[in-house]
Structures are given as C-alpha cells and as structure tokens.
Amino acid sequence: MRDKLGRKMSKSLGNSPDLLGLIDQYGADAVRFGIMIASPAGNDILFDEASLEQGRNFNNKLWNALKLVKMWEAKLGTTNDSDNNAAKFATAWFEHRLQQTKAEVYSLMDQFKLSEALKTIYSLIWDDFCSWYLEWVKPGYEQPMDATIYKKTVGFFDELMAILHPFMPFITEEIYHQLQERANDICVSQMQAPKPVDSSIVAAGELLKQVITQLRDARNKNQLKPKDTIELSVQTQAATTYQQIAGIIQKQVNAVSFTVVEAPTPNAIVVAVEQDKFYLKSNAAVDTNALKTELEKDLAYQKGFLESVMKKLGNERFMANAKPDVIANEEKKKADAEARIKTIEESLATL
Image (cartoon, rainbow, N blue to C red; front, side, top):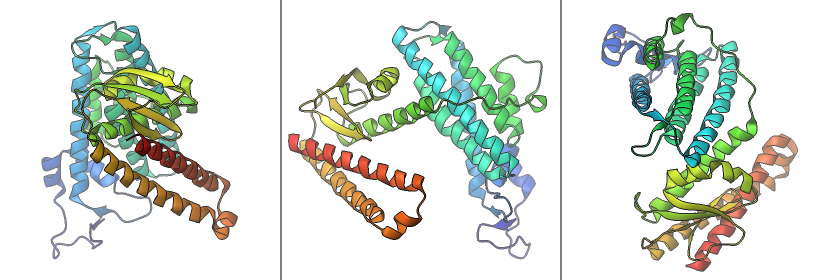
C-alpha cells in the first residue's frame, strides 16, 4: 500500500494512516470500501482518504434509500392502472438489470477482480437503484404505495445487500434486518445465482434514462420551471417501445400528455434522442434568442463530432485493423450524429 503520490508508507514521511482512527472517523464499512475500491488485482494500492469519504457517502445513500422504502411500508394500498403499469415496467427492468450485474460480479470475483466487482455493485446501487428505480416506482404525493411493487422493491433491496455484503458487512446486515423481520443472518445466507436476462428490457430501460436526462436538460436550457407542465410528443419508428415507458416519462418530466406523432409538431422545442425526435410544448414563455444560441452551439459540437467520426471511418489503417463491433459502433455514432444535426437544423428553421 502506497500513498496517493505513489510513495511507500513510512513514519519519516508521515504518510502512514492510523487505521483505527480512520474507522472512528469514517466507520469500518467506509474504510473497507475505500481500500477495496482502490485495489486493482496485482497492483499496489494507492491510498487516498477521498475514497473513504466516498464510502461514507455511499453509507448515507443506503440509509436514505432504506428510510424511503420504510416510509412506503406505512402507506400500502392499490394504485391506478397508469401508475401501476409504469411501476411494473420499472420492476421488470430492474429485475433484469440486477441479474445482468450479478453475472458480471460473479465473473469478476472468479478472476479476483475485487475492485472492479465493487465498482460494478456501487454503480448498480447508486445509479440504477437509488437514482432511477426508486424514482420510477415512487408514488405521487399523498398516494398509496402498491403492495406488490413494494414487496418487489424489498426483494431487490435484499439481493443488493447480499451482493454488497462481502465488501461492507455491517451496514448490509443492519439494513437486511430492518427491511423486515428475519430469523436468519445475511452472512450465512447463500447468494442466489444469476437468472437469464432479457436484453430488450434492459435496452428499453437505458433508452428511458437517456430520454429523461435529455428532456430535463432541454427544460433547463429553456428555463422551464419544474412546476411548468409540458405537452410531449415523439416522432419514432419504435412506438411500441414507448408505450411501455410513456407513464414514467410523463411523471419524470412533468408532461400532461405524451403522444406518438408521424409529422413534426410546429412551434415546439425539439430534442433528438438517437433516431427519435421529441417535441416539447409549453404555455410558459420561451426565450427564443437563448434557445437559438444553445441550438447553434449544439449544432457546432455535433458537426465537429461527426467530422472526427468520419475521419476515423475514412482511415484505411483503422478500418483494416479494427474489430467488426468497433466499426459498427463508429457507424452508429455517425448515424446518430447525422440525425441530431438534421433535428437541430429543423429546430433552428422553426424559430
């Protein structure tokens, strides 16, 4: 173990941490997390206290997620069909995302890539579970939590604590017992083997995250306040995909309606997501000059990006040596950039 500058630990340099002091300051699980996440297989560990802070923040994230889920336990009931359908997609997506991650973790653990395994679990819990899944299934204000969805969520939380337990045993054991009454302990439980994954559901979830992120970004750029409602429509060749995620999109971007259209919607803010075009209409006043400036900036970036991709695809040496999947990825980048450029130009023409 070395310090973050790569120097050996020594008393003369004063760079040897007091481990018990760090445990008192950050907690045992946070210290374990900080050391394990910075431990690539076969290499020296570069110790940095910032990774312990990351572990402490992760602990806080887990506690906050537990508090949110326990709040739902007090108001279980039934929800309306649209909210229930949206939550059903969210649970189906996370089920397959969890199984996909478990398979990755199993493979990494078999190769003793403990640091990479922890990073994979950390991303699944922090991003997919806390930032996305819990938001997608969260009931509206003063609305009950669907009992079936709640039971699924607790089951997911259990499995997450099981795969995190070898790295952070104390908080995972505590959360495991606080989620519901149990006679057994997580430390003597058998971890469940990964189940088959439906890649189409996982892909739909990734598309959903991308759409929400870009629509929220468009709202911010156009200075639409969170309480300002919008009318949302999409021009797409994948209408069936959006049918199952429409309810979540509406809730996450505060849209009063969401429709699939065949022609561009006039006088609307246009957002390109891969090959699809989204149209946002709002009663709130939109600063067209600021919007035009942002669109022109985005257009210049997309043209520069497309030019760099075209140079790569036009490089004979690259095309001769690159693997087929790498070339296919570059071709997809080219198609996406061209679609975005066309959409931005159409948006500028309507201003």
